[in-house]
Length: 378
Image (cartoon, rainbow, N blue to C red; front, side):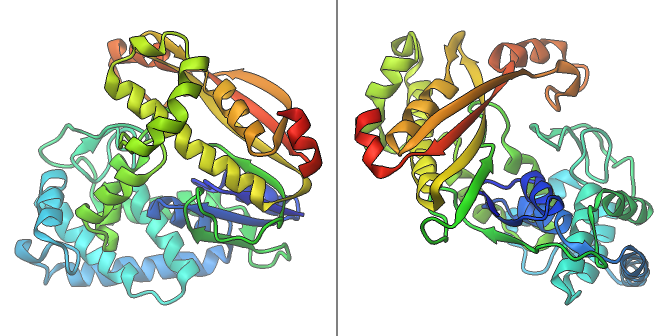
């Protein structure tokens, strides 16, 4: 069986598919998500990676002595990227991260390098204290909370590597179908028609989490520039960019399904229309890559904007049907407050706001309809 996840994120679908002996293909546009997916679905030799990590750290400690404050940036970092790094990292940690990232960048084995980068990122992308001056970096808007970071990279790197290795699912001794992790947009997947038996994915939840906002703190150390990441973030599904051409085709859909749509501010209306336009393209691609009678599982979140309930699952069901996907079942799951990454710690008021924005997930199961049956269903 071939399983495809058009928005693979951290690779949950890919890992599950491999564990069940299926061929898996995952796409994403977020460079950090691609690294995590690749690391989590790779066959690894834990002992060899521990030796390599220790070697990287030893080399970084040696290099650190020759890194001045003026040199404490990734190679070729732009002036804007350097300013970003100065804002979020204190001088000592900048020097240590420069030395450590330089050592990892020289590793030639791409799988090993991905796992080392995941350990590196784990020190930065945290909910609480890490090696940056921020809290709430994971799944939220980073907040600058310290003048000096509470943790040092050289002290945290090997423990972070152990966390990554413990979370790894596959040994190099196992013989399972390989996974393919590719940089690509769910709205235009580089796959032939009819190759997937099953598509499983969870699109970005409208008005919920902007992952790249936090991921930037890690990605700049891997050579990515702030302007590049800003452009990527602006074109992602769920971003607050607006394309006037989308308004013509999707406004009527929004007005029919979203009660009190006209009461929303114009910016919120535009955001909804753009989201529906993007998801229409995603569902068209899912239908295209599915085999005859193939199945798709799509996990979406219903939400509330300015007190108005947005039934995203109903909208996506309608869009799916127009793309030849018939709804076969629906399951709802309440989002437990205790398991949220948001809001910021101790911020009771924002927690209440978030609960009003989103409180459930909906799992939609679709089956690809034969072409002859589509006109009858519509």
